[in-house]
Length: 325
Image 1 (tube, rainbow, N blue to C red):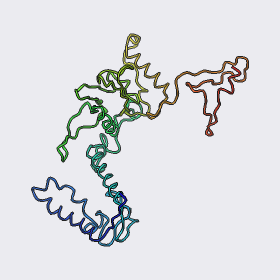
Image 2 (cartoon, rainbow, N blue to C red):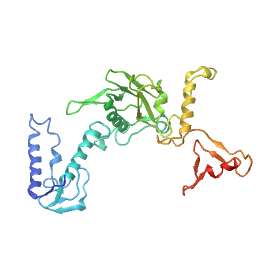
Image 3 (spheres, helix red, strand yellow):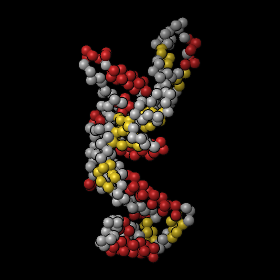
Image 4 (tube, rainbow, N blue to C red):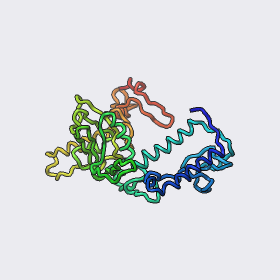
């Protein structure tokens, strides 16, 4: 990887020749389907504006296909290490294959459906704040994790939109409206929807999967896989309330689910899906027995024996005041 090769006017001319040969052949019936990116070979020799920044005199010290640092232009010969060249290739390959071809981001910002895709996604404010939307990048990362367990995540409306140049189906990856499902090799499904039976998991930062039975909820005695939830909201589930009428609330199973969810969510005190802030929900105060100096001061706050009191991270330890309890 540390081997350095020198640039030259001859090497730049060879790249340009590849572009010309590709351009000649792309109109031939036998080649027209496969030769679709000839333009990526063109250099400054024939395209001074958008070509690869290389001609018979100059070359860039720092260069990529989409970001030219024109201030780094220098004359031939310029040494470039093999590892750096391969790193550029891998970056371009991953951007094309992973992000663009899998429809996670748009290739052309001028022709991008920002309602359902692209680096920026348009969603209702309520979804962003409370109801949650399925993030497509998280879905792609989740599938790479589930492959190790012969599982896959897909949208409920998993329709094929088109085929790519390798005849691989490109599926719809907008899962917010109808939810998503996790499927094993036998086709057993675990379905997650905002209005589904597993609504608590739709709103939770993590989802526990029962590897023995993907359709069943996970219990402590089961083999469990905990995954990050691809559904995102800043305050997930805060507007979730029972839909039963008031006269039947006490007899409705959903009430217990809603109340239990809100208790756990408030206790965890998560923000932006981050880690749980507190050890538990237990809070106690000093009663003032034998000494009124510390009456009604906090003894434990949500399970914590110490409290951070400011920017200087001064700890008010309970050992200082235990003698007065």
